[in-house]
Length: 75
Image (tube, rainbow, N blue to C red):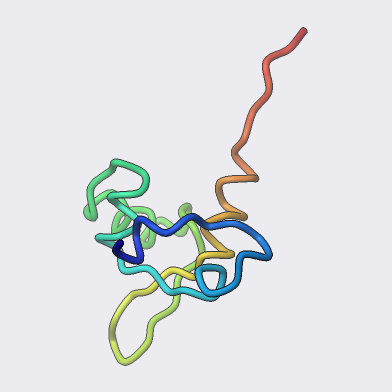
């Protein structure tokens, strides 16, 4: 199982501290890496790290970004 396929669950160990590449995150969200690049330039996407010139996303930042955009239907 690749790192991109690992479940991201609080308290599960390992995956919460995992770093994802743009390709791994793009697969997770079924978007293109170009979309992630545009979001970085526009500063509208999830927080990212630049490590030795390489973009990485922390799992906890990805989960936070997803939670912040979760919507519930109005009843």
